[in-house]
Amino acid sequence: MTALSKALRALSGALSFLGERMAIVYRGERFEDYNVPKRTPRHPSKSHAVLAKKGDMVKLVRFGSQGAKSYPPKDGESKADAAKRKAWYARHGDSLKGATIFDAIYWAAKVKW
Image (cartoon, rainbow, N blue to C red; front, side, top):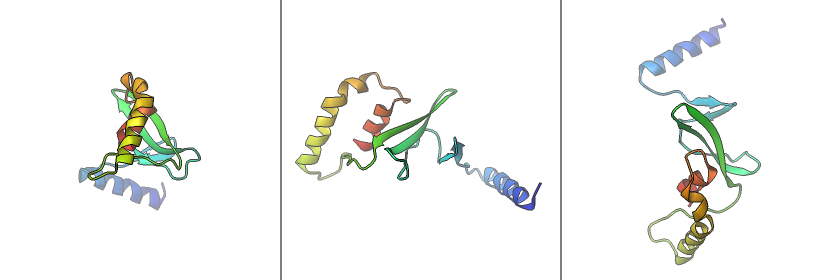
């Protein structure tokens, strides 16, 4: 065991002792925690990713089109933004009815719209 790996192991133990949580690495990608979405600016097509977990089941979910604008609700937003959000929900409302935490549409509605 090298000195660096010993130091990393000691640091990891110290952080867990302090009650801080280490990042989750899944398929070479780091996530803060389960069910916490993050931006993925270097992904060629998807703008966000989340490591969804329910019970023992874990799935990597990518969602959102890279470069597309999103219109989450804001105080004092314009009527145009509200109309765009309403149109999005009109298009995707049927897909949202049966959506689970493992579906991209669930996370797109939660994060981007």
